[in-house]
Image (tube, rainbow, N blue to C red; front, top):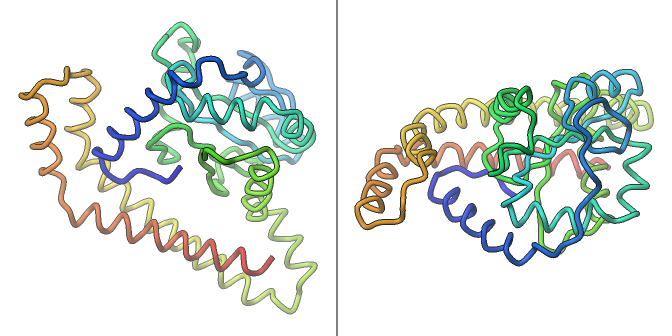
Length: 265
């Protein structure tokens, strides 16, 4: 799922998620999420424990930003990808899995994790659910992110994941060692990607500040009335189109830089 760059898209995607959620109620769920501790390939809410183990095992982490009891796309990915044996077999040797849940039922997530989840959502620029953020083993360096899709399978998702972790320190080192003739060009491509990511982060920060009044209002869960629709439109108009455009351009820049990296492999 692509990063959202305006609140209208967020509103529409949220509504779509609710519709899909109804269709997915009978979907097979992924494994139970542990509340404490961490094991390779096992979903946990304990981010700190997962980071510690990732460092010990020299493995990447994948953060699953989800709305487990309302997000249709999240339920679909649970059923089609994460509940399947092919994914479980791969994950148990290759990745630490962290669930960062934003459910309607507040009893699902222990209170001690709520603020931390919100902090990580802001830190990694997550603007919609589900978003799968892939981190290097330090628990801080973002290698990339993945999204949901109606046609995604364990095989296709694993391939996407492998593509992302090529950007880890170990992945880059391995590529340079195996391809010394491409080293300088590859390093240049990496530098271009980092610059594009920095530009995107700055653009998203500006846009988020501009969208804050609207998002704060949406958190009050306004009813769908004619008056509130007018308020919604007024909030939208208050967001400078230039910020939306610059964020789109920055997203495009990152995507283009990522394609250059992919061409090396």
